[in-house]
Amino acid sequence: MKSLRKIIALFIFIFITGIIVTVVSINTTLNKKTPTELVKAKDTVYLLKKQKKTV
Image (tube, rainbow, N blue to C red; front, side, top):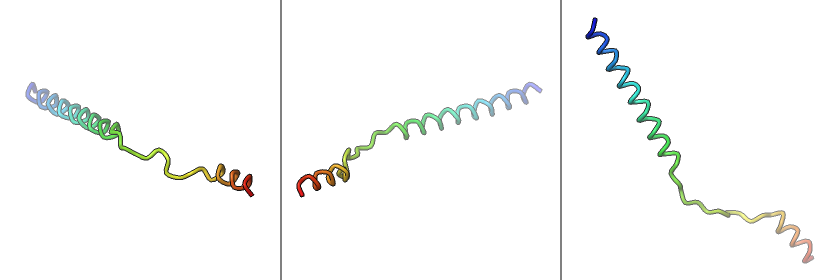
């Protein structure tokens, strides 16, 4: 009976350790900063207003 409790405790320990490792690895993946361009397209409303003023 004592060995059964030890086996159950070992499996619970392995399960909790696996969850912690998974959460940490997902958090490090999500927190990586990827270099991105801030402006990829110009504001068309501003350009249309500017074009109407010049015409």
